[in-house]
Amino acid sequence: MENRMVRVVSHILDLDNPDQDVQEGLFTVNNNAALKLDRNEVTVPPSPMVLKALKNSINDKPLNFYSDNQSRKLRRKLSLYTGVNFDSIACYYNQAAVMETIARTYLQPGLEALLALPSDSSFSHYASSVGAKVVNVTFSDLFEPKIEEIIADITHRTRLIYLANPNGITGCSLTESELVFLLSYAENSLVVVDESYFEFSGITVADLIPKFSNLIIIRSFSKGFALAGFDTHYLMTDSRNFKFLNKIGFQKQPDTLAQAAAEAALEDFGYTAVIIRQINESKKMIFENLSGSGYEFRITPANFFLLAAADPRGLTAFLSKQNIFVHDLMGLQGFENYVRVTIGTPGQTIVLLNALAQCAAEQAISLKTTRMAEKPVTRVNSFHVPDNRAPIEGRVETQNVPY
Image 1 (cartoon, one colour):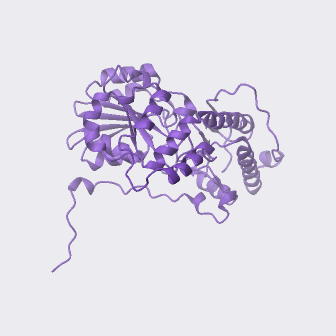
Image 2 (cartoon, one colour):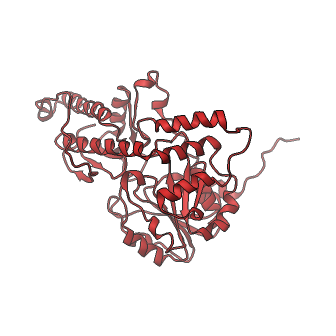
């Protein structure tokens, strides 16, 4: 008898293989000294209250029982934190669970999902996995998204529209008035707004939830709360939508320890506020010290910045030799000459800036570029940090260094 594989459904054959990237910084020999700036994770551990809560949960909670499948305690804390009604919040064990639940609830063959690019590939993957057509919306200016360009692609088949606000690649965002216009125009489509970087940017449309039943907001504990290892996500929408979302999202709640960690992180928001303040200070250091260095860069409202490079892989290779790991965007159309760099603490930023200065100097010497070679490069031991701690946005146009 021939041992044949079971036939899969046809639309699975058209799916791209999931991104199986290896986070090099996790597997270095001297991992404790590595500066991991490649995945927009917070570069410091979570609140000590989180660790204490985990220890208490292991000792006191019955881990032989399943976790609360409605995440009641966590949702109550989230309601206080977000100002959104308890019944309008649901918690999930990771981003994939959120994406799968939304896609399977609202999409099917014959329907379309609009995806504002650039974007994380997970939404496209789950929309395609249920047989829906994914329509990619590419803005004419990647750093100036216009709501009109999304609306131009809406048809009677458009059931779902996904966009990150701010965007996880460019850091750009749409205004609340633009999103109100989109929600009103696309009244027969579900608009999914990913606010994973809310803690850094302060950008949200949560106040629109009572006004628009076709709005879903996604947020995460993996960014501002430093809990990427417990990748808890939550979804906020009109409570009536959960009559349907819960049919698919049942048993996708965070486990007992993840719920305990998220609850403790919310209780100690002061710790997160310190993280945000340090990142804002680092943004100023980057702005002040890279402006005249020959690098072109863009600082975002989130916890990362973009660095232009003629040879992104050369730059990432140079930095990795110094145990600094960043993410080149060469696989993304329009971003072939950009590297995305997570912004860490001021001390970590000093290490990064010193490495970038050394990189520029060494490459300048190797190419015999007199202008760069004659300019002395000194190690950075201290920075002037202004008192104003508001985030800096902007793009500084300067001459690109070879790396």
